[in-house]
Image (cartoon, rainbow, N blue to C red; front, top):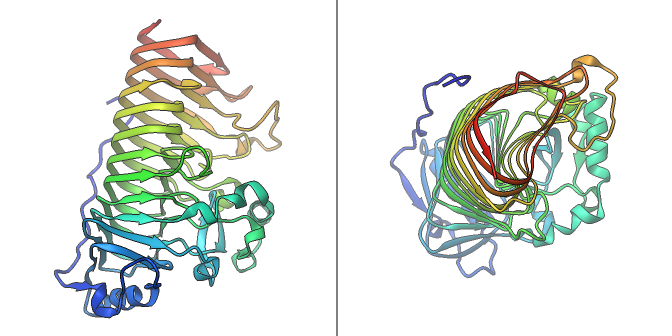
Amino acid sequence: MRFFEPFELPTEPAIPALSVNVRDFGAVPGGEVKNTDAIRRAIEAAAQQGGGRVVVPEGVWLTGPIHLKSNVELHLEKDCEVRFSTDKEDYLPPAFTLYEGMRCYTYSAQLYAKDCHDIAVTGEGTFNGQGFVWWYLAAMYRRGVEDMHEAGQTHRPLEARVYDKPEDGVRPGLLHFINCQNVLIEGCTFSFSPFWTLHPTWCENIIVRNVKVFNPYDHAPNTDGCNFEGCRRGLLDGIEVDTGDDAVCLKAGRDEDGREVNRPCRDMVLRRIRVNRCHGGITIGSEMSGGVENIYVEDCRFEKNFIGIWIKTAPERGGYVRNIEYHDIKIRHLWREGICFTMGYYVDDYTPEREEYIPAIENILIDGFDCEKCQTGISINGLSGHPIRGAHIENARICALENVKTSNVENLCMENVTFK
């Protein structure tokens, strides 16, 4: 290991042996009756007895948002589908959220937890977010997101950052756990998310294992597969993704709001990632103002993405990306770059006004990289006076129309790299 420092991997949450069934609290299958209150009562009953497993059996179960509590596991049995309501009013009152790396109050995520410990979502069933009633907002409205960014830049109080109308253009995620400890997400399929699909935020000791994320690639905007934001001591061990944005992403807040929060994403192991169609296969950023460091990625197989390994940030982000390792990455049929590190994401000839807001990217190792087809093999672009430092690419085979494109780079090392 060149840059990554091993740490003690996370352990599973402690869930008591108690088990309750949502049917016993009045839940009705079939997909027509909303079971929001029945599922809430089941979770509360388990929590009041010290915690346990809340079982959703075989069948289709319609519900509004589900809010977990400490010491509770939500378990979907085989052939179970939890289908979330398409009525936007069901996701109000607004809940505290991070949206594109910025703090606000907006529609509750469909699976939501805040300030909890020892929680789990497990099973062989499917969560269906029915996101088609939300996706159009991305094309029609952006005013809420723009106002949110201004609010973060000017330190507007959180209680004044409320976006609870469709014309704000702010959508709920499918799973959003905030500031939770000892978290397990295992086995389930997550589909048709309104926005980011799995979004653990400020969580510590977290495991995501053997899950699937399926969102329509062509018309489900911003439906990232799994975004760890400001998390610490995490393990992603097995994910299959086909979605309309990045597959797996590490984030740490956006611009001034992210710098104020200052919650780095660090000490993460990501492995056994399988992707068919997405934007970035494994991505860091672009929201990374709190910093991303000490990350180990291995055993990834990507096909039909835009970009394979992607580190993206912008001149005003601040923060850092450092001490990152990638091992055993195999890719087929990329539309763009096999490897892309950029400090100019969505920026053309931008000169930052404040030096301290310029991000740093350094100490990146890619060892064992096989890319069968792409437009550009390696693209590494820093900023004038602020180069990307210490990128090492070893044991790579790349078939590309354009081999290497770099600017503002220091200490780039390529060893045993072949182009075809």
